[in-house]
Amino acid sequence: MSDFRKETETVQNYVGGEWQAPTGDDGQNVINPATGQQVTHVPFSTPEDVDQAVEKSRQAFQDWRTTPVEERIQPLFRLKQLLEDNQHDLAETLVREHGKTKSEAMGEIRRGIENVEVACGIPSMMQSGTLLNAAPNIDESAPRKPLGVFTAITPFNFPAMIPLWFLPYAVATGNTFILKPSERNPTTPYQLISLVEQAGFPDGVVTLLNGGPDSVNALLEHQDVEGVSFVGSTPVAEYIYETAAQHGKRVQAQGGAKNHIIVSKHADLEFAADQTISSAFANSGQRCLANPIAVVVEDVYDEFATLVVERAEAINVGNGLKAETDMGPVHTVDHAQKVKNYIQTGIEEGADLLLDGRETDPEMPENYLGPTIFGDVTMDMKIGCEEIFGPVLGLAAVDDFEAAITRTNASRFGNAASLFTKRGDEATAFKHEVEAGNLAINAGTAAPMAFFHFGGWKDSFFGDLHAQGEDMIHFYTDKAICIERWPSR
Ligand code: NAD
Image (cartoon, rainbow, N blue to C red):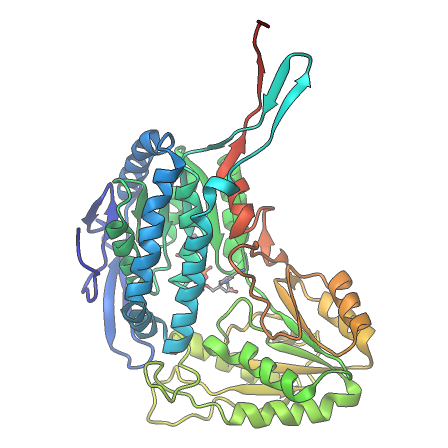
């Protein structure tokens, strides 16, 4: 067993129970967003590396599929404890290569651990129907069976949590699993998989494969990969969905977002403002569940705008490892520039710049941005309808509650939505009418617990079965039918 892999100059693949360097000539350096210093280098896997990984995974499936389920979940119990024991180290790595704050990183790891805990219940969750005397002298059952090698291709913004939306369920149901994490922060998944190694899964059951789009394409086209989970931006999600399906695979692809908070005139405005700020600016706005648009009923618009600007002005931007930091830098200088371009576009489109986050300490690296708030954002503005994925909040005034629902549903995305109100009839209308996969009433972020599924609607999701919880059992297994007739005594 190896120790927890703390520091590394180059991340490696974990294939067939062994650590080995990806053999591609290309790769990329990973930079600490808070300091500009290099954290590590990630070399990319070649198609031959992918072939080898899938073959080891396919071989491991032969024994793993028939390993009793009680044995299959034992490494997950150990993994839960290893994650608990190492969460501070893992969180600090995550901060160093992502930029979020330590408490955000700890929260992310906690959400990941919850998925490991839920998957420990697979012996109950995986059961399916049996009916005695389904027909004359016939008993009928519908056993669930694992299918083979699954892969998950994951994004940069939650490098510890999102792999755990999939890995525990894939292996507990008897499949083998290949993680292709984001090349933008590969040390966190590298350390995560070193804990998976210590948890004691048989060789080849879990594989780590580093790489970029070419490695993804090799996985999508590989005949021995049964299914693909994807989380990332909408254009790539759409591409993954189509390409994986063309190659006969199961696929679930979660995409980008532009979520809305509705603030009714019956809301507790102070509370709604607190929650809106946390939702829009946590993780520097780089969350698929962030609510970067607040649709506010006109009667309370001015008061609400004042409250959110006051709160945003108090946000302390800095290195995520410092206790006093509320918001870290955005992930890269390029991404910060993209966010600044959106702010400039917003000004040119005629939105009302209430707080300008571009004005940060000139001593800080260029990817530090403060919170930006625009008023009078309309749907025809780019900043009103496109995913910015940075610390920018837009406020939109609407005549009444019905107009707020119409405005929310006009988005092409449907990942999440929130409502602030004290009225039950508004809450009911919101729950019934809003077209989004994750809804929250009097909460800023509609994050489901691990025992519920997680997935958006519209252009935020391509597929049918979502991540987490029971949907994962359906995604990772197929049901057979077995009818039995025995001669009577
Ligand atoms: P991304 O789409 O750039 O990358 C995600 C993954 O896809 C990475 O592993 C990357 O290597 C791979 N990839 C990138 N381009 C590819 C291509 N052309 N072909 C094949 N593979 C490719 O996403 P990101 O920037 O890492 O993450 C941010 C995005 O993810 C945002 O849009 C955010 O909303 C979204 N996201 C969605 C959810 C959700 O649950 N819906 C959760 C987290 C993040």
